[in-house]
View (cartoon, rainbow, N blue to C red):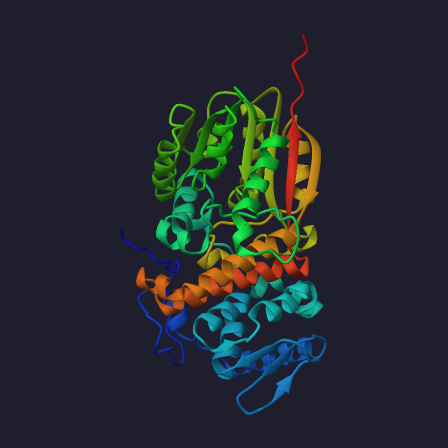
Length: 428
């Protein structure tokens, strides 16, 4: 199987020096430290020092200087590069500096949790008001048009089925589980994923003979459990790698007569269904296309039908502040992605569909536990990740991604919701 590693969309001019151990062809923006003038570095250092005076965090530099009120430790190994990256690229530079090994943390999740909990006030208000001048904008090439969505999805989900299999449980479910209690144990993850799937199928009323549309196949576990209930499933995906493996799993389970998996954009869906389920798909849609996505649910749902969604959410004011900004997670993990707020979801549904919101339930702590288990598994199997052809920079990238996401849920900056939307029956 050919392995594909993500490449940044554009190559930047080399800076003052290079991270010699980083492959410059695969990771040009990590290998090259951007040029930053002394004033930029000085302002960046001053902003960091100001923030650290109020944070329960310790940041230690090579000369022994330590800043912060105490708490999780951040070891800065290369202050010049660290300040240059943050000063020129903001949070993208912060993540790239970690990828380059210019800083590290014994408790990475703990350090990132402190930063996530204070995300709204890390930057002084006067600089926040000038965000449009210094923050990078989302590239037009990552718009979630039908063609753009195919490219964006492929860059993450077509990396390698073997890679995902190394840190996911045997259900190959890549979304939050629902546990019975904490702390969770790896041996319980598969059952917790089934509990989540069954909860969604119950919300949507999926049973014998139901016609179910699934938007976002993953590797097929939800479709398999729906088929086992006697439902007829049409599942849509844009990932060729996922579709191939999901089809193999459907055939192996003997459900080929009940499950159809189509390489198809949600905007191309046809027909009507008794139920729709979509798990963590809304985050890949983009704000521009949220009305289209929810109108598709409305149009594809038969009168009296039910749609169950699992959606990651963030605070509305933070979503508004960052929705046009290009982030590290968009550059390296989910191009074109945007986490909505509950307010944005509910307002879009109200303004653009005839659906009624019947239920909403948040369970962010369960996602933090799910991510912890994935991160620990990924770390434990680092040698096997390397054997698949993924280099050290990729492994640091994914370690940071999993820790960064876990920290978002542990801090409360992120949440995850189960939504139920219903459609009125036609008047007789």
